[in-house]
Picture (cartoon, rainbow, N blue to C red):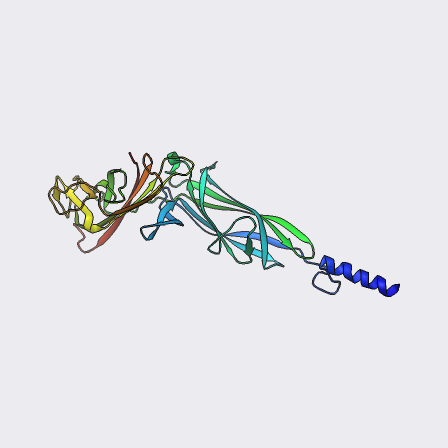
Length: 318
């Protein structure tokens, strides 16, 4: 009888997975914490989330890219029971589209696993077209809530939370030029993108040796269950720089330089028309276009000192 009782006791211990002489005597408490790793939030969605690739590049489609490091004690990994990311801008919650939710570069959802020293990444964009322009220099907070579970000799659960603070950064990086106006038409997947910007000197000096102008355009469809997305790329060979209908490589103070897409940019005047390449997924008509222009130049008073201006603007698409 005594031998039989000992065997029954050993069987019960095996069923629970615990041994009085093993690691489960007692099993240590598990802790999971989050620490800020990086944050980058822009006033316009110029960051590439990696969710969508068109024309061979990741589409610039995100306002924010925020990351956190995981730190665990007494465990190398835990299961994720739920994961939530929220964004506040200037103290107010924003309705966002979460474009990427990753752990160490891989998609992460409830039921997944996270590891000690791993990294969480959240890329997002304001969900409503009317809110695609975030207020520059205003504070923002990315808020992470991770519910986790660890199955060992006993089930342990917990919640790790983190606020990632920062400020909304401007997307315009200008030196010699300032934006006067911008416009865009619907993308044509056969003919390309059609966009235009008007620029003036911003340095109180003539701007000379203007060249290497190129456009990147991201299209966002009107609000809906599945709004469309598009991308346009136009190289310097199909961008005209003109003033008064004539090709220009320099402008004086107060003059306006028209920079626009054209298949024959050297003509005087060049025709404003679609050029380059364009691709879309879904319908982008009636939405918004984020135009980004890169162009290099010099101040007349500082020959040989090149400046690359990056000018971005959000406009309506007919």
